[in-house]
Image: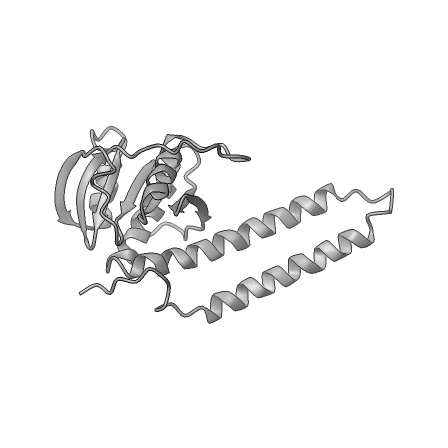
Length: 212
């Protein structure tokens, strides 16, 4: 029986909090150093700021990766299989859109695709999103430990996304999560980068080396 929880009550925050605190303190120290040399005409801060920005992006992705598992673990026992599938899809740059239904049903919000009704496995997800498969262009819907359907069409966000270049998959992920509490995983076909959408926000996540 899956325990349904909106939050992250079952997650141990201590290790990730320590890592995040260390990273934030490091960035804070570097920002203070940058302020001290700001008046020095011979010292250009552009390279330093770019380095700080990169470190901040890494911290954000680490935090998102941790919270992703917390958000998923209450709604599917197969969250580790889902992580393996996403890693492999990312490695091969096979675009993917995966909806994990949580408390609120989403079927009235989507254009239904092809019923699947099979247990969630990395191999099946990889097969669905393999380029050339008729089902690979749409979204997979996961409920509990099952792949309910594939090739679903999600509503696109109508919001303006500032500072980010996002494709149709990302706009679809944002669109559905603006209308429901679903979590949507996105793998970029162009870059292989992985992100997840929740409550109308998009978060980049880190992927581990591909698991064979």
